[in-house]
Length: 514
Image (cartoon, rainbow, N blue to C red; front, side, top):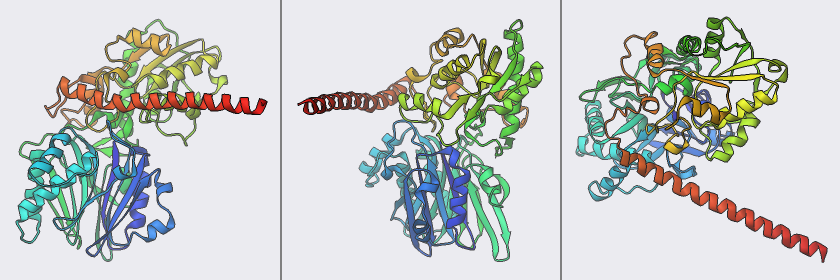
């Protein structure tokens, strides 16, 4: 999961991009980057860290131009967190292209080999985005054949990209001297929307992962980019679009609505806040069916994304709603943090239970989802430590049982607490007296209730259905092997450091005594 933005403006664009990335910061706190076009010259700055830390005044001054792209990132399955992997990426031929990507290519390793053997292009990092950029550059080269670049040639190139790529991708890119090119994968897995602003100098355009990035800066939301569609906006502000996929279908990632997106965004015609309210309605009905005789004194959300669902559950059950957990907003999202130890440590730093709301009560805690179970286990224990008599835990999402390979960092089956376990077994692991999950069909229907035009979804982490059709057990095994090997080495290094530290402490003690 990442956040991307692209702008064609009539005035300096650096501040616009910075403000848009701040509005997309929830989509990634690992790294941030901006590239601008000033005439035929690109200017770029990117680094690890939050937007406010990556860009200082001197960095902003070094980003002149009236067009640009930006990205906030957290690393996806198996990717590194080095600054070399931060986006945007740049390639100098043909024409010069900078590109930022949200999603995950499932065939990037195969493409990387093709780039070297067939296309004669060198890939210098382990990022699928660099592979994607070089595929695009190669297809643009084929489409132009040395001739002038125009929208028709670009759309032909994007059609070639669609034929070669597998997985999820929403793209913004700048082509030196020409304009902004953006496109979305033929399944529409990752979101991308279009906005515009009319100014005395002419129309300004923005594309972004979520509508909140447009509206928060004053742009008018126009529409979503359609699955497989490409949009090209030249530096004069002329807008062109074309469908570039042969059989596109809309299958938006439903986990965006559960957890990833901001509640004030609208994705593919679905207000995120409304979807979460509707999820609460269906969850309340299931709680009534499964726990008819269980007394519930109070309903509490885990802030922030589970609040709408929790409010609806409380309303439907006729039970008091209370805020029992206080959130420290300066700690990142726990399930996307690298390393189990880091996630577990951050839960207590992130949340604090207020004892006055728990003592002597049967508490129903609503969370948006349960992934690894680390956070849930800590939360249940915090509720008991605060004096709760019983802790009932409910998830607004179904059990996460399968790896996600389309850009969300939950790749290994062994890390998923619900994989291969019953609900009762998960309840025992997290320490809850009762556990209720949303049904998969109810989750999908909650979204369809709001936008009936949405027929299918990318919900592989819940139902195991990988819509791109190229995911096999061998593929998942290879991902897990690649992911677990560095983690095992990290654990060995940590153990070695601890032993070395102990030896140094013992040596220091001996020297002090002597």
